[in-house]
Image 1 (cartoon, rainbow, N blue to C red):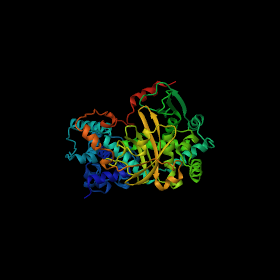
Image 2 (image 1 turned 30 degrees about the vertical axis):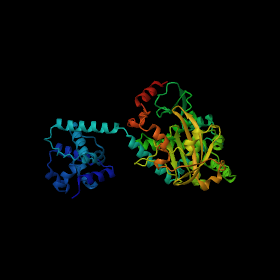
Image 3 (image 1 turned 90 degrees about the horizontal axis):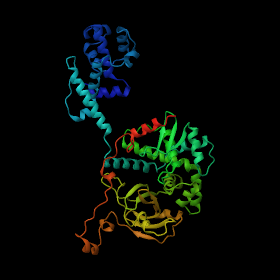
Image 4 (image 1 turned 180 degrees about the horizontal axis):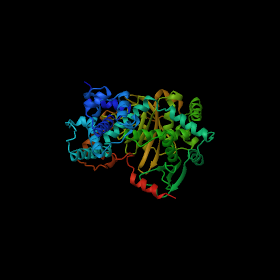
Length: 488
């Protein structure tokens, strides 16, 4: 015997709404005044099979549908595309579909058999409760743990492909070729040319919704950017990310994981426009041949931030230079903000495998750099860890939320290709051993143990759920009101 759930899945795979079709066929039969027995004789089928079809539990063959359409003086297309014949039928369909869903099955609730004797009010209550439950589920925010798991999944994907996405590289190069960009830094004017080529106009406004970096109006083909001069969001990069979302055909994300992945892909796309693969690889290979690789040179050559240059290096280093590496963005408090690795370095992680929000060993380069007086040049250091010795180069950059270190690291044997390999700075990290840097020395413990009670500076976003909505943290009402106000 075939289960209801398996039939439903099969119907969904074929794109057929078996429940709606069944209700339509029952409605037409009742209007014609025929019984199941009478109809069965006319179409050469059994009454029991026709009953299953009308209940949405069997899919009729095209030959049967053709005969039924002739009897009811309609067409197969009309049968397949018809709307519920009545409000009552629509309610029956809604409740029936709800009872067949995987979510309903997971609740362990009994199902009700819907018949002509089932009160309409009962169906309305069940359908209303189902609609409210669906709304609540769609509104439900990603918890911090769900967000961490999404980060873990994405980082595993990035590691598997060495953080290199050929299809995004190709789309970026195709767009550059379309506007005749011949190489070198991508100017703001050239970025605007890219938008114009795609049919967009770019407008700077003083009242962009505070929860957004840009707003794309797909109806009128406009991209709105903020006139503010916040150092956190360089307008060229923001524009290119908005263009990337359009070129990569991103729709509304259905989960926090998809939202996160879209952000990574649009950032990648923007970097591929500002630092095109072919010429950037040529630049890096020449530096490697001189044994003089330096992230700051890539930054200066293309007029981008150090963070963008470091990210771009991870995109190209393994695939084109044969160098495995890791990247870190660490807050001055020692907390990991972003990280990537394919070189075996051991980042601190929680039980989900997430490293974001974890504290980096204070002896790693990404922490030691905060104590360096000379922040004009990159700080380089070798660090002995349980996973091996790594050479790292790091800088500190300011942000509205504080200072962050940005670092690129490679295994000891790969240091020979980099400027700064001759550094004498060296440290030893035994983390994750707590005795490395997470516990006070015996002297400090003796002096202060039991005599201090610090008030932690709690980060509210780490304690709360992720903001709800298709785009977490974005006030959709504010965005729509903004767009409505931009009408000429």
